[in-house]
Structure formats: structure tokens, C-alpha cells
Length: 291
Length: 308
Image 1 (tube, chains in turn red, cyan):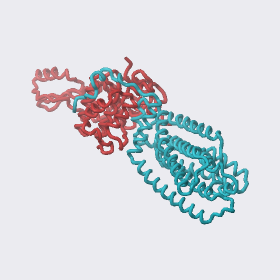
Image 2 (tube, rainbow over the protein chains, first blue to last red; image 1 turned 180 degrees about the vertical axis):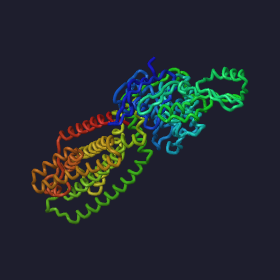
Image 3 (cartoon, chains in turn yellow, red; image 1 turned 90 degrees about the vertical axis):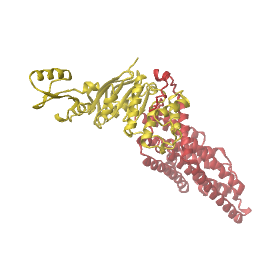
């Protein structure tokens, strides 16, 4: 089966501004992929090119084996834009009905009802979009993106208007989508959210991928700290697996050990380092503390 | 969070399996129907209906007064059919007003259709569906034209009926003036839609109304050219009128109102607003349709190159 999204050497220039400078990415089936980067890094441009809304200057993008922008590619994806709006005069049910018709979804009323329930709007199918809060509209946007059971979901800041509970529901939704083989490209500034749900992450800066891998790969070891009678001692090169040996050696050397901390850099640290704003050394976070 | 029932297992295991995108014509009709529903829901038709009722009331009052005054002054020796002159003059003025109202409708239904909607974030969710951009344009044009064209036809018919009821005069031709108005507003809707690709809503609205004004000016130039017997002015008027064929269509419709009227009545009619009327043959209709297609092709090409 073709990858859900294949991006090869993608470039985009707006006159003298280079938004993308040769990006390569690939999303497999059922993969949840996080796209990180500062404002203006090129994330939204990449997503818009995948959606066929923006023409690339070079390179290629394929959606489920079809060229981005083609009808077949459009039929395979769902999209929620960062800055979206739906007609304020129509109801939630009418909006989903329109997208069903345009997609050619055979789901009918049942699909609309189920999707509205999925995003916890099942009780307001006849409420006008204009009478909904921003958070409700964002959830409606998610339901709209899921019309026709797309193979690929492109979500650009899908939780920006949601409260913590709403974000939690979206995370749970994304995980269930993954279980069902839906691939998701999640463009978000919420690093903790990405770290929690994404299988792989790419960090884009100035139009190029500057780091990529699993959240664990990007969150590198930061050493081991051991508390003795003399205070905290740092073993900068040590990893988690080294902690028992270090404790044994210290005890054998006659020292009393009161606590151990395994340090790892978080995804946020990796992000800041990748985009050129490395955290101060004392910002490295303990993975867990042992007495 | 509820269980994701929306992703029924059979669909979820095979995402996209139940999708069968509509053909282009059907997709265009879906967009057009949605546009019409928007007009209905936003009470566009209520506002139009109320204002049109006022317009028809004023037109009826003016017609009644005009025929009454004409009856008092008319003499059988003059050889002028006063009913024809008054009726045709009033119907001609009504046609101008109706074209203007139809233009207002066409412009306001389309002025922000592309750039305006894209800037507000309304367009992107639609265009990531299997909906070609040309189909979206066609749908929006059909939606606007489906409102404007019947509107101008119905209001013109109502004016003709009022003129007949109050002054016992009916145009020499009925279909040509109605079709000329309908095709005229369809062209204006296309121009406005095409303008909406490049221009922000306000700029586009101003631009199309200025084009409408330019067409009107071309018609006036034609009248002046005829009065001064100036070939140069006449040529300029002709070129401008054909470059903006809604004006040529309006003039053709105007001419059709009194196409069978001759003699002193003809002369009297030509002294009024009918001086700018120019009958045109089948060529004008063909040209107007080709113009419409050309505007559509240019719009599709421009929209295809636009990043959203």
C-alpha cells in the first residue's frame, strides 16, 4: 500500500522568501506524525501543499499514492485548517451534509450523527455555526475532516481553541484513529501534546527539517544525578541503565546514597535546541527521582 | 469522550472505501444549491422582495400619473401615439432601474466569492474536497445567476404588466428585453466572480460598479454621438458597448420594446431615453455567450494559479 503521505524534495518560494527548502517526509498507514516548528517555519505551507491549496515550487507530494491536489488525493484526505471558518448561517448537520455530498460519502444521516457524537456535539445538530463557541466550531471542524472516513488526516493546530478537557478528548480521538489505520499529520505548537500521542516527530525550521525521529529518540539522555552526604553529584555521560552500577560503586566506596535522578531532555528541549534556542543546562528535567 | 462510533469498524478498517465523489456538474449544482440556501437563510430574498415591492409601487404610481398627464395633453392631430411614447419611456426607464438592481444583486452575491472567502477561511475546507476549482466557480456563478436572472425577468414582467394595466401599452417584443436583462446580469455576475479572485471584496465591488458606470457612459456617448452626428464618438461608444456587452444587451432590449413603432411616435420615443437604444442581431447574443465563456476561462486560469 502506498504511504499515506510522501513528500520528496518539497520546495516553495514566495518571491524571495523560501518557505520550504527541500523537505522529505513519509507517513505510513496508521502513523501519527507530529510536525513542529516556530511560526513561519513552513509547517502550514507544507500541509496546504499536501491539500492542494498551495502550488509547490519544486519537489513532489503524494497522498495515498496520488499527486497532491488531484481529485483522488482529495478523496483520500480530511483537513482542518489552523484558520478556518464555516458559514455562520448553516447548522452543524447541514455543514456535514454539504461535505458529505462534495466528498461523495454514502454515510448519510447516520454518519453525521455519529461524527457529531464523536466530537461531543451530538446534542446540537441543529445549532447554527454562528451560535457556537470557537471550541465547538473546532470540534465541528474535526467532525468535518472525518467525513468519508479519510485515510489521511491533516490537522493544523486542531486544539488551539480547546480547553484542557477538549484537548484530552482530541488526543483520545487521535489514538483511536491510529488504531483504525488512519494516518494523521498533526501540526501543533503544543509540544506536550505531540510528545504524548505522536509516533514520530519532525521539527522544521526556516523551511528545512532540522530534526526527526520518535519522541524518545529526540529526547536524549541528560546524565544521572546521585545525592550523597556530600550533596548532588552529576554523572553527565551516564544513562538510565548506568544508574544501578553507579549506586553500587558509590556504596562500595563507602558513600551513603540518598537519592538518584535520571536526567533526560524533553521534546521541548530538543525542539529549542533544534530551532536554535537551546535551553540552559540547568533546565534539563529529571525523568524521575528515586529515594 | 464518547466512543468513536462515527468511524464504524467496517469503514475504519478500510478508510475511504465508501467515498464516491460526484461528477463536476453535480458538484457545481451542490455548490449552487448551497449558495441559494445561503441567500434564503440570510433573508436576501426577503430584503429583495420588500425593496422590489416598494420599487414596483413607485413605478405604478409614476405610470398612473404619467398616463393621466399624457391623456390631458394629447391631441389626435399630432400623429403621436401618446400611450406608446409614455409606456415605452416608462418601461425603458424601468429596464435601466432593473438592470441596476440586478447588478447590485449579482455583485453582492459574488464580490467576495474567492479572495474574500479564502481570507476568512471559508473556502479552504471546500477545496480540499474532490471539488475542482473550476467547478466551484461554476457553482458560485450558477448560484448567483439563478437569483439575479429570474429576478430581473420577474420584475421587468411586473413593470410591463403595470404599464399595460395603467396605460394599456405592452412592449412590441417581450422575450428579447427579458433575455437581454437576464444575460446582462449573468455577465455582470461572471465579471464580479472573476474579479473576486484577484481583488478584495470592497475593491472588487467598487470595480464592478465602475464597469457598470462605464457601460452606462458608453450608452450616453452613443446618444451624444447621434445628436452631434459624430462618427468618432459613435465608434468609441460602439467599442465600449461591445467591450461591456451587458450594456449592448440592455440597448438591444431597449430597442426591442418599440421595434415595431414607426412615424412620429418613433421620433418622439427616440428623443427620450431610447436615443441610446441599438437593435442588434443574433451576433450580439453569440458574442455575449462567447464573452461569458472567455471570462469563465480567464477566471479558471487565474484561480488555478492562486495559492490559498
